[in-house]
Length: 101
Image 1 (cartoon, rainbow, N blue to C red):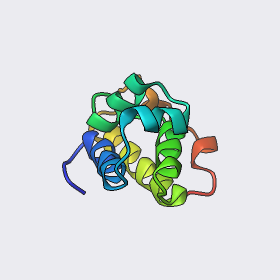
Image 2: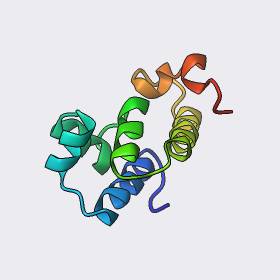
Image 3: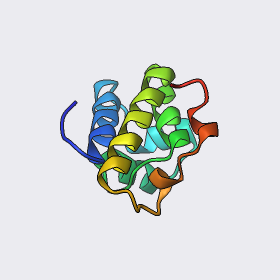
Image 4: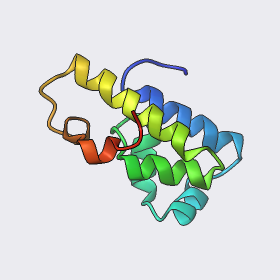
């Protein structure tokens, strides 16, 4: 882990992308996500949706379950520091956590 807060997950995912030598263009092709979505997620500009995290992990050869757990942990950290959020983090529901905890 590199930095704290919301950007930690994105930065770590970007390190995975760089480790396998994949460009944003290639990652977008493999994940079906827009390059702008990937850039926002991997730089910490926006907290990524679970589907985006899992798509990136799969495209880069990462373990999807590990990254699912990382996403859940990041959600919990973010929720505990900012309880009145109105974005994806506050919208985490039981269906997204099923089988994770």
